[in-house]
Length: 348
Ligand SMILES: NC(=O)c1ccc[n+]([C@@H]2O[C@H](COP(=O)([O-])OP(=O)(O)OC[C@H]3O[C@@H](n4cnc5c(N)ncnc54)[C@H](OP(=O)(O)O)[C@@H]3O)[C@@H](O)[C@H]2O)c1
Image (cartoon, rainbow, N blue to C red):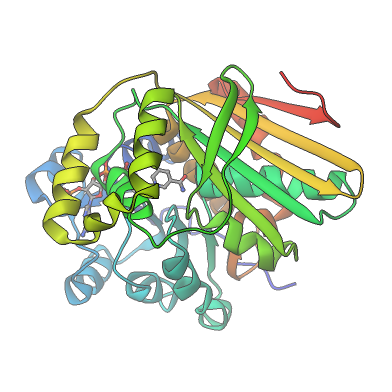
């Protein structure tokens, strides 16, 4: 297996979206581990400069390339905002710059995955599905899949705290998910440690599509709920009635994003669960934590550190394809994240 070029010990780490809800954690964790090397970026020049960073816009490819070239010694980009397509990842990979991408939209991740040969020939590595969902869900799915000896079916569940101050870009992504075409999978009841038995609804997280390919499991559904039963019931009743499809219109999307950003009913905890089934074998793994934005940022920072300090295979990979990242849930226990395994019908 070809591995990535060893890190240049002085090369800089560009954190795009580096002062957002997720990016701020990435910037601070990496600054502690790699002092003087981290450059946070965003569109607001004065805000970027206040954080010791630069102006960068992922929707303007020429200026993005210019930023990379003027910084000159960037060895890694951590992408903490969703760009319109794979162009910024391409601009990095063709320069041999590693990419860590926290994106959660399937077609955007597929676009970066198509750059595998380019990354390989440039000696660079890109890691996709980085965060809580996708990210930790992929890692738990892989464990549960292995524990049953190859799952015939995987069910993933994500509970988000509606009291957390999620970033604008993450709320916009959730609104897009609520507005998506009708999803045919059914809602189910499942237990999430600390939250009791909840009704959870199919939601277009990218992990369920990625894992079909990386684990070879045909039947996978990711479902979600909020910690507030009231808000979950209301939102998914509106979705069932087709009333959230209007959010595909730009003004409705912007208004709904602003409304959801301001509604804080509930706490800031999150929970995820991955159930694997094969015949009568059933294993589930769960993770509980506080502040999904912070934990997403920590996952991205740990992945970036792994690429910068150890050899990783070149090319584009999802997190569950890199054995060196399999123990990341254990590493996060130092940050208050709790991992459990439930066997058979054991629930709590
Ligand atoms: N994988 C996961 O589990 C997971 C979890 C949470 C979030 N996410 C994804 O992470 C992304 C960020 O979420 P967030 O909660 O951190 O959002 P956020 O708080 O709105 O942060 C977005 C950041 O990106 C910058 N930005 C926005 N548009 C930009 C552009 N065109 N070019 C460069 N920078 C830009 C913003 O600063 P300026 O406004 O100054 O540009 C801000 O710093 C979302 O795409 C979300 O879907 C993934």
